[in-house]
Length: 64
Image 1 (cartoon, rainbow, N blue to C red):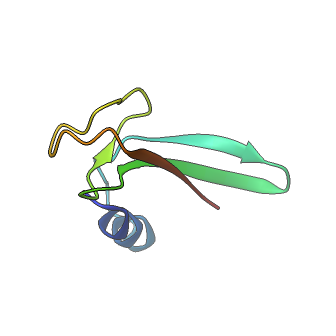
Image 2 (tube, one colour):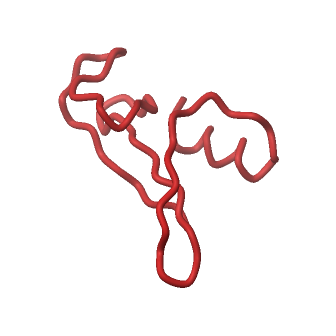
């Protein structure tokens, strides 16, 4: 699941299987999403290598 799919599910209020974590951000809260920069697969925070494409380029997005 890519970031676009995750955000669509989040805004639609559906139950997503994406691994995310919460982060306190001063005046609100943020959702942290970990995603492969190469193929867009959403992965967990401990992932070092994408299970879909084997890329090691994992990025972290904070969505407030």
